[in-house]
Image (cartoon, rainbow, N blue to C red; front, side, top):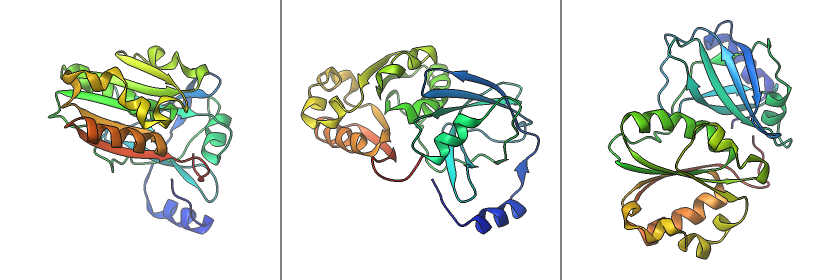
Length: 238
């Protein structure tokens, strides 16, 4: 979630090629705090691996990263999912977008290799900030006939969002409950089921929850882990 002086972003825009003629074509409010935004443009020549994201300039001095949730087969329409929580410039920017607005995008990037094609079983953990990444995982896992499980900690108003997005095999937990307490994490049925003991775990979202879950996985299983906390309470971001 980079920040920089205004002149830095202005200079970069002069030298980094942008995708032309991208505009907001559709907006869905999945809840009062989760918004799915469709962008229309010519994305045919771009590469979209699982977890690809855009760094979007959301103010004169800030950019925020948004994962591409999905892209259609014609590669002229893609979707982003934004958490509208009202406490950051990225949230404010996404909240203010309207149909017809034009948006400046550079080429998508993939820094974190979240998806492991060799994994036969995948457990994905996250929160509202992880929904787009989960959506990018889903069709690939289904096509490759993986066994998978989604674990989300969500605000109550968002409990139905994963199902609406088609994220099946999903368990939703209240925010700041189980994953704030390692002893409660250990008691999850997941860690009593040997079928998942050698799964590949992808942990995203709240840094504290990610750290707590990672510690338990390392002590309770032989699983491989990919972790990347997206935000931490009290730290500027989103």
